[in-house]
Amino acid sequence: MNSKSAGDTTDGRERYTLLAIVLHWVFAFLVIGMLFLGYYMVDLPKGTPNRAFYFNLHKSFGVLAGVLILLRLYWRLTHPVALLSTGIQRWTDKAAWWNHRLLYLCMVLQPATGYLSSSFNKYGVKFFGVALPSWGWENAQLRDLFMNFHHLISILLVALIVIHVLAAFKHLLLDKDQVLQRMLPWSEK
Ligand code: HEM
Ligand code: HEM
Image 1 (tube, protein in one colour):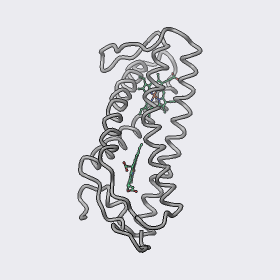
Image 2 (tube, rainbow, N blue to C red):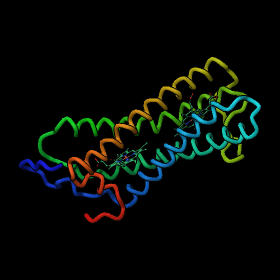
Image 3 (spheres, rainbow, N blue to C red):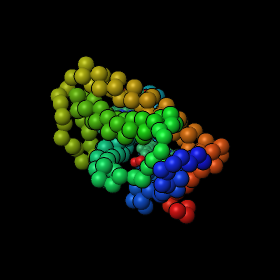
Image 4 (cartoon, protein in one colour):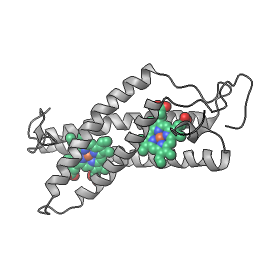
Protein backbone atom coordinates (compact mmCIF):
# COMPACT_ATOMS: atom_id res chain seq x y z
CA MET A 1 0.00 0.00 0.00
CA ASN A 2 1.85 3.07 -1.14
CA SER A 3 -0.96 5.58 -0.86
CA LYS A 4 -1.21 6.88 2.65
CA SER A 5 -4.39 8.75 3.44
CA ALA A 6 -5.08 10.87 6.49
CA GLY A 7 -5.66 8.58 9.44
CA ASP A 8 -3.49 5.73 8.17
CA THR A 9 -1.57 4.26 11.02
CA THR A 10 0.19 1.24 9.66
CA ASP A 11 1.33 1.75 6.07
CA GLY A 12 0.90 -2.00 5.66
CA ARG A 13 3.87 -2.77 7.84
CA GLU A 14 2.20 -4.30 10.90
CA ARG A 15 3.14 -7.96 11.00
CA TYR A 16 1.00 -10.93 11.89
CA THR A 17 1.97 -12.65 15.15
CA LEU A 18 4.42 -15.52 14.82
CA LEU A 19 1.69 -18.06 15.61
CA ALA A 20 -0.59 -16.58 12.91
CA ILE A 21 2.29 -16.76 10.42
CA VAL A 22 3.13 -20.37 11.32
CA LEU A 23 -0.53 -21.39 11.08
CA HIS A 24 -0.89 -19.62 7.72
CA TRP A 25 2.00 -21.52 6.13
CA VAL A 26 1.09 -24.86 7.74
CA PHE A 27 -2.40 -24.50 6.24
CA ALA A 28 -1.09 -23.28 2.90
CA PHE A 29 0.95 -26.49 2.49
CA LEU A 30 -1.74 -28.70 4.01
CA VAL A 31 -4.58 -27.40 1.83
CA ILE A 32 -2.57 -27.33 -1.41
CA GLY A 33 -1.26 -30.84 -0.64
CA MET A 34 -4.80 -32.06 0.05
CA LEU A 35 -6.06 -30.62 -3.23
CA PHE A 36 -3.32 -32.41 -5.19
CA LEU A 37 -3.88 -35.64 -3.27
CA GLY A 38 -7.67 -35.43 -3.76
CA TYR A 39 -7.48 -34.89 -7.53
CA TYR A 40 -4.75 -37.53 -7.85
CA MET A 41 -6.51 -40.28 -5.91
CA VAL A 42 -9.95 -39.93 -7.56
CA ASP A 43 -8.30 -40.60 -10.92
CA LEU A 44 -6.83 -43.91 -9.74
CA PRO A 45 -8.84 -46.80 -11.22
CA LYS A 46 -10.51 -49.08 -8.69
CA GLY A 47 -8.21 -52.01 -7.87
CA THR A 48 -5.03 -49.92 -8.12
CA PRO A 49 -2.65 -50.98 -5.34
CA ASN A 50 -2.43 -48.28 -2.64
CA ARG A 51 -5.72 -46.62 -3.74
CA ALA A 52 -7.22 -47.27 -0.29
CA PHE A 53 -3.99 -46.04 1.30
CA TYR A 54 -4.28 -42.68 -0.51
CA PHE A 55 -7.98 -42.36 0.39
CA ASN A 56 -7.25 -43.05 4.05
CA LEU A 57 -4.30 -40.66 4.02
CA HIS A 58 -6.55 -37.98 2.48
CA LYS A 59 -9.23 -38.55 5.11
CA SER A 60 -6.71 -38.52 7.98
CA PHE A 61 -5.02 -35.26 6.95
CA GLY A 62 -8.44 -33.83 6.09
CA VAL A 63 -9.74 -34.52 9.60
CA LEU A 64 -6.54 -33.02 11.03
CA ALA A 65 -7.10 -29.91 8.90
CA GLY A 66 -10.75 -29.75 10.03
CA VAL A 67 -9.82 -29.75 13.72
CA LEU A 68 -6.89 -27.36 13.30
CA ILE A 69 -8.93 -24.85 11.29
CA LEU A 70 -11.43 -24.53 14.16
CA LEU A 71 -8.55 -23.77 16.54
CA ARG A 72 -7.08 -21.34 14.01
CA LEU A 73 -10.41 -19.58 13.57
CA TYR A 74 -10.86 -19.30 17.33
CA TRP A 75 -7.36 -17.82 17.61
CA ARG A 76 -7.98 -15.42 14.71
CA LEU A 77 -11.31 -14.20 16.10
CA THR A 78 -9.78 -13.52 19.51
CA HIS A 79 -6.63 -11.86 18.03
CA PRO A 80 -7.61 -9.15 15.54
CA VAL A 81 -4.94 -8.22 13.02
CA ALA A 82 -3.90 -4.60 12.57
CA LEU A 83 -5.63 -3.12 9.53
CA LEU A 84 -3.49 -2.29 6.54
CA SER A 85 -5.17 1.03 6.08
CA THR A 86 -7.57 2.84 8.36
CA GLY A 87 -8.34 5.38 5.65
CA ILE A 88 -10.53 4.99 2.58
CA GLN A 89 -11.64 1.44 1.78
CA ARG A 90 -10.29 0.69 -1.69
CA TRP A 91 -11.85 -2.08 -3.79
CA THR A 92 -8.69 -4.15 -3.36
CA ASP A 93 -9.08 -4.00 0.44
CA LYS A 94 -12.64 -5.26 0.07
CA ALA A 95 -11.54 -7.98 -2.36
CA ALA A 96 -8.86 -9.13 0.12
CA TRP A 97 -11.42 -9.09 2.92
CA TRP A 98 -13.75 -11.35 0.89
CA ASN A 99 -10.91 -13.56 -0.33
CA HIS A 100 -9.71 -14.26 3.22
CA ARG A 101 -13.18 -14.90 4.60
CA LEU A 102 -14.12 -17.20 1.75
CA LEU A 103 -10.84 -19.08 2.20
CA TYR A 104 -11.67 -19.58 5.88
CA LEU A 105 -15.21 -20.67 5.00
CA CYS A 106 -13.95 -23.22 2.43
CA MET A 107 -11.35 -24.51 4.89
CA VAL A 108 -14.20 -25.28 7.33
CA LEU A 109 -16.72 -26.62 4.79
CA GLN A 110 -14.27 -28.82 2.87
CA PRO A 111 -13.37 -31.18 5.76
CA ALA A 112 -17.03 -31.12 6.93
CA THR A 113 -18.44 -32.17 3.54
CA GLY A 114 -15.68 -34.79 3.15
CA TYR A 115 -16.49 -36.24 6.57
CA LEU A 116 -20.24 -36.19 5.90
CA SER A 117 -19.87 -37.85 2.52
CA SER A 118 -17.67 -40.58 3.99
CA SER A 119 -20.16 -41.06 6.84
CA PHE A 120 -22.81 -42.12 4.30
CA ASN A 121 -20.34 -44.57 2.75
CA LYS A 122 -19.72 -48.10 4.00
CA TYR A 123 -16.00 -47.33 4.45
CA GLY A 124 -16.51 -44.55 7.02
CA VAL A 125 -13.58 -42.46 8.26
CA LYS A 126 -10.34 -43.72 9.77
CA PHE A 127 -7.93 -41.28 11.38
CA PHE A 128 -4.45 -42.75 10.84
CA GLY A 129 -5.92 -46.24 11.37
CA VAL A 130 -8.40 -45.40 14.16
CA ALA A 131 -12.07 -45.63 13.13
CA LEU A 132 -13.95 -42.39 13.90
CA PRO A 133 -17.67 -42.13 14.67
CA SER A 134 -19.87 -42.09 11.61
CA TRP A 135 -22.31 -39.16 11.32
CA GLY A 136 -24.67 -41.12 9.06
CA TRP A 137 -25.63 -44.48 7.61
CA GLU A 138 -25.04 -46.15 4.26
CA ASN A 139 -26.86 -44.02 1.69
CA ALA A 140 -25.56 -43.48 -1.83
CA GLN A 141 -27.67 -40.36 -2.56
CA LEU A 142 -26.47 -38.48 0.52
CA ARG A 143 -22.89 -39.67 -0.05
CA ASP A 144 -22.98 -38.29 -3.60
CA LEU A 145 -24.73 -35.08 -2.54
CA PHE A 146 -22.01 -34.21 -0.02
CA MET A 147 -19.29 -35.35 -2.43
CA ASN A 148 -20.68 -32.97 -5.07
CA PHE A 149 -20.37 -30.14 -2.56
CA HIS A 150 -16.85 -31.39 -1.72
CA HIS A 151 -15.96 -31.26 -5.41
CA LEU A 152 -17.48 -27.77 -5.95
CA ILE A 153 -15.76 -26.35 -2.87
CA SER A 154 -12.44 -27.74 -4.10
CA ILE A 155 -12.88 -25.76 -7.36
CA LEU A 156 -13.76 -22.62 -5.40
CA LEU A 157 -10.69 -23.19 -3.20
CA VAL A 158 -8.41 -23.47 -6.23
CA ALA A 159 -9.83 -20.22 -7.68
CA LEU A 160 -9.50 -18.36 -4.36
CA ILE A 161 -5.93 -19.58 -3.87
CA VAL A 162 -4.89 -18.55 -7.40
CA ILE A 163 -6.33 -15.03 -6.85
CA HIS A 164 -4.74 -14.92 -3.37
CA VAL A 165 -1.25 -15.85 -4.58
CA LEU A 166 -1.43 -13.53 -7.61
CA ALA A 167 -2.46 -10.69 -5.29
CA ALA A 168 0.44 -11.44 -2.94
CA PHE A 169 2.91 -11.22 -5.84
CA LYS A 170 1.24 -8.07 -7.15
CA HIS A 171 1.94 -6.49 -3.76
CA LEU A 172 5.55 -7.68 -3.88
CA LEU A 173 6.39 -6.85 -7.49
CA LEU A 174 4.08 -4.01 -8.58
CA ASP A 175 2.94 -2.20 -5.44
CA LYS A 176 6.32 -2.86 -3.75
CA ASP A 177 4.69 -2.58 -0.32
CA GLN A 178 5.05 -4.71 2.82
CA VAL A 179 1.92 -6.87 2.52
CA LEU A 180 3.72 -10.12 1.66
CA GLN A 181 6.45 -9.39 4.20
CA ARG A 182 3.77 -9.18 6.91
CA MET A 183 3.26 -12.89 6.44
CA LEU A 184 6.97 -13.85 6.44
CA PRO A 185 8.55 -14.83 9.77
CA TRP A 186 11.98 -13.41 8.97
CA SER A 187 11.06 -9.98 7.66
CA GLU A 188 11.60 -6.87 9.77
CA LYS A 189 8.59 -5.04 11.11
C1 HEM B 1 -8.73 -29.40 3.62
C2 HEM B 1 -9.46 -30.49 3.49
C3 HEM B 1 -9.75 -31.19 2.21
C4 HEM B 1 -9.46 -30.86 0.91
C5 HEM B 1 -8.74 -29.62 0.38
C6 HEM B 1 -10.00 -31.93 0.08
C7 HEM B 1 -9.91 -31.95 -1.31
C8 HEM B 1 -10.41 -32.96 -2.12
C9 HEM B 1 -10.37 -32.97 -3.57
C10 HEM B 1 -9.77 -31.89 -4.44
C11 HEM B 1 -10.96 -34.12 -3.99
C12 HEM B 1 -11.18 -34.56 -5.44
C13 HEM B 1 -12.55 -34.06 -5.82
C14 HEM B 1 -13.03 -34.51 -7.18
O1 HEM B 1 -12.31 -34.37 -8.17
O2 HEM B 1 -14.18 -34.98 -7.25
C15 HEM B 1 -11.38 -34.85 -2.81
C16 HEM B 1 -12.00 -36.08 -2.83
C17 HEM B 1 -12.36 -36.78 -1.70
N1 HEM B 1 -12.27 -36.35 -0.39
FE1 HEM B 1 -11.44 -34.62 0.22
N2 HEM B 1 -10.59 -32.88 0.87
C18 HEM B 1 -10.46 -32.48 2.18
C19 HEM B 1 -10.92 -33.14 3.31
C20 HEM B 1 -11.54 -34.37 3.28
C21 HEM B 1 -12.01 -35.08 4.45
C22 HEM B 1 -11.91 -34.59 5.90
C23 HEM B 1 -12.55 -36.25 4.03
C24 HEM B 1 -13.19 -37.36 4.80
C25 HEM B 1 -13.02 -37.58 6.07
C26 HEM B 1 -12.43 -36.28 2.58
C27 HEM B 1 -12.86 -37.31 1.78
C28 HEM B 1 -12.75 -37.34 0.43
C29 HEM B 1 -13.16 -38.49 -0.39
C30 HEM B 1 -13.73 -39.82 0.13
C31 HEM B 1 -12.90 -38.14 -1.72
C32 HEM B 1 -13.10 -39.00 -2.98
C33 HEM B 1 -14.48 -39.07 -3.43
C34 HEM B 1 -14.64 -39.92 -4.65
O3 HEM B 1 -14.39 -41.12 -4.56
O4 HEM B 1 -15.01 -39.37 -5.69
N3 HEM B 1 -11.81 -35.13 2.16
N4 HEM B 1 -11.04 -34.12 -1.69
C1 HEM C 1 2.32 -19.11 -2.01
C2 HEM C 1 1.18 -19.11 -1.39
C3 HEM C 1 0.66 -18.00 -0.49
C4 HEM C 1 1.10 -16.72 -0.30
C5 HEM C 1 2.28 -16.02 -0.95
C6 HEM C 1 0.21 -16.11 0.69
C7 HEM C 1 0.33 -14.83 1.17
C8 HEM C 1 -0.48 -14.24 2.12
C9 HEM C 1 -0.33 -12.90 2.64
C10 HEM C 1 0.76 -11.93 2.25
C11 HEM C 1 -1.31 -12.69 3.53
C12 HEM C 1 -1.56 -11.40 4.32
C13 HEM C 1 -2.50 -10.54 3.53
C14 HEM C 1 -2.87 -9.26 4.24
O1 HEM C 1 -2.36 -9.00 5.29
O2 HEM C 1 -3.72 -8.54 3.70
C15 HEM C 1 -2.13 -13.87 3.58
C16 HEM C 1 -3.25 -14.04 4.36
C17 HEM C 1 -4.06 -15.15 4.33
N1 HEM C 1 -3.84 -16.30 3.60
FE1 HEM C 1 -2.30 -16.65 2.34
N2 HEM C 1 -0.76 -17.01 1.04
C18 HEM C 1 -0.52 -18.17 0.35
C19 HEM C 1 -1.27 -19.33 0.40
C20 HEM C 1 -2.44 -19.46 1.10
C21 HEM C 1 -3.31 -20.62 1.05
C22 HEM C 1 -3.04 -21.89 0.24
C23 HEM C 1 -4.36 -20.36 1.87
C24 HEM C 1 -5.56 -21.20 2.22
C25 HEM C 1 -5.94 -22.26 1.69
C26 HEM C 1 -4.18 -19.03 2.43
C27 HEM C 1 -5.05 -18.41 3.30
C28 HEM C 1 -4.89 -17.16 3.84
C29 HEM C 1 -5.82 -16.53 4.77
C30 HEM C 1 -7.13 -17.15 5.29
C31 HEM C 1 -5.30 -15.28 5.07
C32 HEM C 1 -5.91 -14.23 6.01
C33 HEM C 1 -5.17 -14.33 7.31
C34 HEM C 1 -5.87 -13.56 8.40
O3 HEM C 1 -5.97 -12.35 8.32
O4 HEM C 1 -6.32 -14.23 9.34
N3 HEM C 1 -3.00 -18.53 1.94
N4 HEM C 1 -1.60 -14.82 2.70
